[in-house]
Image 1: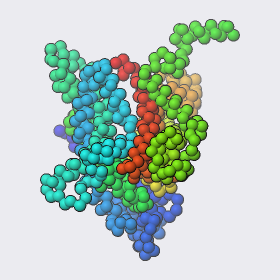
Image 2: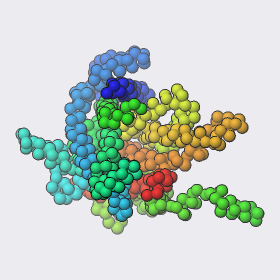
Image 3: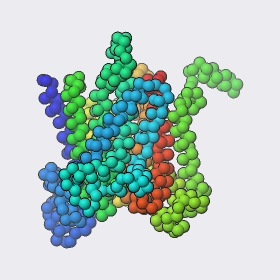
Image 4: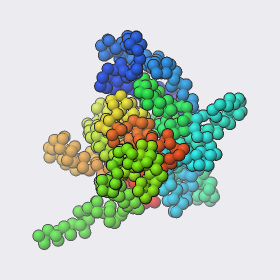
Length: 322
Length: 295
């Protein structure tokens, strides 16, 4: 236990500067961009009065270093500016959308991990044709752009077969309560989760296969086999159990990829999360919101990585002392 | 002349002289590299000969009735503005390949420079550079590229630059790792002993030996760059004056209900490009890693 506290402090020291880095990158980009940074920080539209107060609030008439301090403290306070187009604070707009996106990401992550670990283990255990065909399939899974996959799934299941809704999170015009509401959300969740899970499934399968193969070369497998244990027990109890920690870690570190995947998938299915917000903001040129989504997205990914890193150290004491 | 030939023959047979490329292609090529090479060759030929294999200029509106179903003349149909989807797909390959190659070239230059500095000089420089590299690696590269293009302006050069600027960290790590291992080999010690300058050792001794291991990674990075461009296009961040597979999918999104062909063909072509590059890259990784090959 004694190694735990320094480990946590070390990890925090490693990840917290990254949040500053994100803010610094954003600040530099905004001020390097051609034209007046006001337009990017405030938005391209707005009446004279609004822009004037915004300029004063952001300190845009002050020198660069003072401006940076103002920007930094604003962002850290959670003040990302005001979306003139939607008459709402940027932070509120984004925070309202985060639960929907996380629901999508976590559900997809759960199903792809469950199925991917199973398929990956089978591929590693059965050499030969099954392994090759599963690996090839997972290569296709990795290669197909998921936003296109989403469009195809939408055309097949929603437009042609009509068994799933075309998009959104709840049926428009019905106000369901309690369990009906949950069922309605699940009904809308199926297709986007399917899209995102297929993409992540290929990745999980690949990682699991490699990790189980690695574990199968270890001495304790030889021991287990020489004890006369049935092969299925050797694979699932001995190899997979040891292979699982790195697999789960990789899945966790992949949150960033999955978050970006969700942003693109949401656009296909009109899922009301950060992705749809981003898509609309790009069309409307609502720059404060675009910048805000970059900052919030990065922070979510940094926190996810930090959690995975800490859990890894918690589960495997060998990591801590390194 | 004859002597030269005999000498070369002898060297080849004795295994002293090897042609790695020839060896890969003829003797030990695994099926993935082979399949990948074939797909990429066909795609590249299609991109180069685009003007000869299409009969409508891309981007030109109303070359046919809008929303024409695929037929003999409009192989992939037409879109909402009556543009020929087939021409746009073929020219879209061009765009994808240009974006992939040029943005990764930028990433290779930045990544190699940082990897070389960190791997060769070690110490504080290494700590600093690697910390920055790791940070950049965790950040969502797609969102960063998106922000850059959104605020600097949606034109073709900016898209290439933005993707290049976010793609270097992986390459930097690979180059550094190779440098660390090659630096310890005897021939580098020999080069130092005869008094070669750092520059010379880095660029003419270590780098040529480090590159083969990095090449598969570069190919996979080209892939990632093509997907980033397509993803940006899909969200509507693209140069409207350049045919783009991603942007076509963005347009298709509004008409999924009635015009399936607008989504199917651009996406199919994009998938084929990515599958080809993945096969090639994965195959090369496997080929260069004996531990994986044995199985």
